[in-house]
Length: 314
Image (cartoon, rainbow, N blue to C red; front, side, top):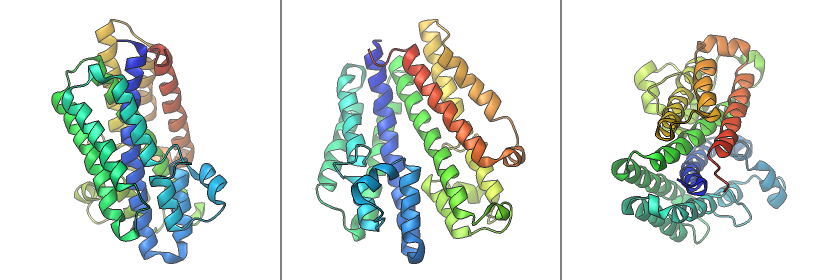
């Protein structure tokens, strides 16, 4: 497979995952803004920080973190190359570049997603319509995932796409935990103490983990247990452990297919081995923020190495 084609499949998957992640962040911010009007602007800013869009937002809108401005910026603002509409277009463009490696069902699902969102986001979304629009974004992504896993050969193209999906997902989960953890705790003195259950439950909802967490831990909400669930619980499909194992698995398939061990493959294995073996209390004792920043740096380095190893830019 040409490096450019592999890169197109990888970025198609990353952009689609990013669009869904951003939709979930908007939904989480919307839920808190409805119930906490006195802190709504701080919450909307945290959404932008988590998504890595705060700097560009301030350039366009100064410090006006009103719900309407933030939502429109993240959904459809042409000045924002990371808006959901923009990243879905980039996903579609990458899918078109790699069209011959996709089944008809996958291509049609990606193309339909782009056309559907183009219609939904043609105008500014009213607050009353926002939940339905965000649900449609998640639903469209689910259809692409279903087509991908249900119709694609388990060849290198499939594995490059899956690697991109789980790399993007791991990055998003780590960012949510890192940003929200320190925003929700008033000070470091409160670490391990009583917490605001409503806001911590919102973290779980933003990664579709609320019901699964309740099933596993019951009604008890604690920072330690939420962090353990989203970092180390290997059966949770958005946890760091689950995503890292899938990244290692898909890179291993690619390496076997080409009969060539790569530095990216070794880095993925090391990420699972070195950063996900310690118990959650040891992670907290060493500093959750430091752990998550180190994890994000490691995944960014892995992404750069994969681009070099497989020549995505050629």
